[in-house]
Each structure stands twice: as structure tokens, then as C-alpha cells.
Image 1 (cartoon, rainbow, N blue to C red):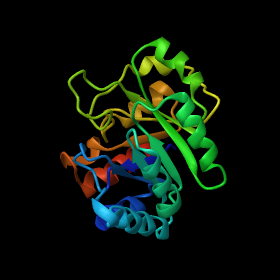
Image 2 (tube, rainbow, N blue to C red; image 1 turned 90 degrees about the vertical axis):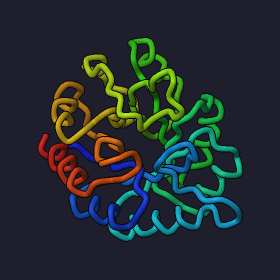
Image 3 (cartoon, rainbow, N blue to C red; image 1 turned 60 degrees about the vertical axis):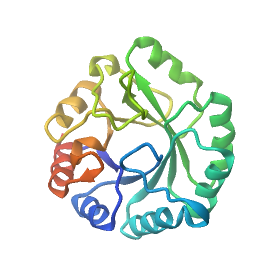
Length: 219
């Protein structure tokens, strides 16, 4: 039975649906180029983020905030104002930068690193990241304008026998139809989905959320 993260949620109805279906984490995207972005502008930019994260935590879910190449101010604001259970980095952050932020997060929340993988060399390079959890994703298409949530799958055979030093989640093109196969092929004990439970980019579907969680939990 795999743990499940439903990422890219934007409203309380879908958060509640995820909770009732048995999700473990819910993710909130703070990246303006994404159709799942919930980061506002101005002095109250984080108000909606705080409200949705608090709502999720009140339902017993773990809240994960996804950031792409954040500046220091945004990272600190998310860490200390939103107070999520985890911050997921999904950009071109350097190992030194990630290490510094990992230390800042100590005792407050987990720090995750999402990494696109398509070769054995990509897997070997994972040793450079000092984080609490890795998210193994498919590499985005060359013309993609965002690093994840593109619905692309990876070669799951690369992950046979994969045993990093920290816990990890499998992501990338997962759907209710293929998640059981992906878990069987990789041995993943946790999975992450975004576009695979949407009826259109950024629009979550409650039936797909329930179907995905049921499939992952029965794998």
C-alpha cells in the first residue's frame, strides 16, 4: 500500500475529496507559470496559500508547498508564515543552496528535492542532494515552460532496485490506470500525481482523485 500525494490543488472541495479518499499529502504550487499556481501578488500574496494549507492540516493531511527557484524572501516567508509540513524544490536550485535551506528547515518542516530522471547518470547524481525526501520525476520535454506537471512518464525500469539514503516518491505521468504498474515496476512506496487526476490543466477531478488513491493504496 503506497502513500499518496495529490499535488496542484487549488480549492477546499478538492482538498476535502483527497482527505476523504485517504491521501497522505496534498501539494500547493507557488509558480506563476503553472496552471495550478495559487501564489498571489502584493502584500497578501500568501494569504490563500496559508488558508489552504491550514485547511488541509486541519483535515489531517500533510501540506507540501512546491517552489521553483524561489528567492530567499519567498522561501523564508513560506517556511515561517505558511508553516507547511514540507517544502518541495522543483527548479534549478544548487546543492549548496538546498543544503542551506535544509538546515534552515531543521525542526520546522521537511525539505524535499524533485529531480528529473532519464538515465543511470541522473540516478547517480542524486547523491549530491542533502534533503529529507526525494521526488523522482520524468524529465520535462525540451520545450516545456515548467519543470513538472507535464504528464510525462519515465522509464520505470531505471528504478529497479533503487534504494537511496532517504525516502522517495515516484512522480511523472501517473494516472489511476498506470499507478499500480508503476509501483510494481519500481518498488515505490509513495507516489505523487497532479495532471493525472485532472479533467483539464489545473482542474482537478474528484472521481479521478478517488480512483488514483484507491489504485495506489491497493497496489
